[in-house]
Image (cartoon, rainbow, N blue to C red; front, side, top):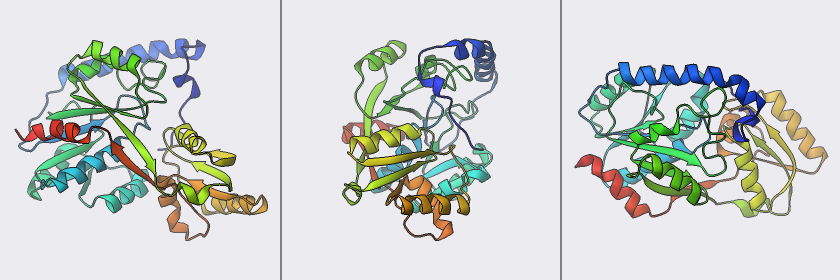
Length: 310
C-alpha cells in the first residue's frame, strides 16, 4: 500500500484538522477499547518492540537492525520479526542484506513461535507497538526531530497512531536528530521513568556528490527529511521528486527521469531504500546516499536493552 502523508499533519492545527477531528475521536475510542479488551499473551522469549506512534519515517527499521547487530556482537541470537505485506518485499530484501535473521509472518504470534523453534533467543519486533495481543519485555518508541508529534492529533486529523499518553507503556525513547528539551520535558511529564536517547545518520559517500547538479528522488515516509539532509550536506539539488512511501516504481518512469538528468547535466541521488527497489531494472547511473545509523550514549543504551535478559 502506497501512502502520501498530508502536509497539514506537521503544521499547526488548522481547518482540515478540525473537520477530521470527530473521526479521530472515533479512532481514539477504538484504540482504547482494543487495549482494554484484548488480552496480552506471554511468550518464553524476550521481546523487544521497536515501534512508533507517529505514522512513518521515524527510523524504527534502522534502529531494529542496529539493535539486532549489537546483540549479535554481544553473543545473543536475535531475530527481527516483521508483519508481511506483499508491497514491502523490496524493503524486506534490504533488511536481509543488512541482517540475515528475519522472519516474516502475517501473524506475529506464529512468527514468534517460528523463532522459538529455530532456537533464536530474542525477538526484535520491528513495528508492533500497536499490537496489544503480545506482552513485550521492552518497548522502544522512535521519533524524528523534524516532526516529533506533528500537530499532536490522532489519525486522521493528525499523524499519531495513538495519543502521547501511550508513552506510559514505554521504556525507551529514541529520537533521530537534534536534542529537543521542550519535547523531552513534555514526554517526561507523561512518564517520568522514560529513558531518552538520540540517534543520527552519518553520511559515508557524500563527497562523491559535492559540486554536482543533482535530481533527488524520495519514496519514503518523510521525504523532506532526506531533502533536508542533502541541504545540510551542501548538495546542489536542482529538482526534488517525491513518490509515495512503498511506491512500486515503473522502469519507464526511471528511464524518463534519467533522460531528464542527462539533458540537464545532472546526476540522480536517492535513498538506499529507493535504490534497492530500482536494482531490478539493471539501469546505470543510479546513485544513493550511503548512511550509517548511530546511537549516542551507546553503552548506556545497550545496558538498558540487556535488562530483558535479567
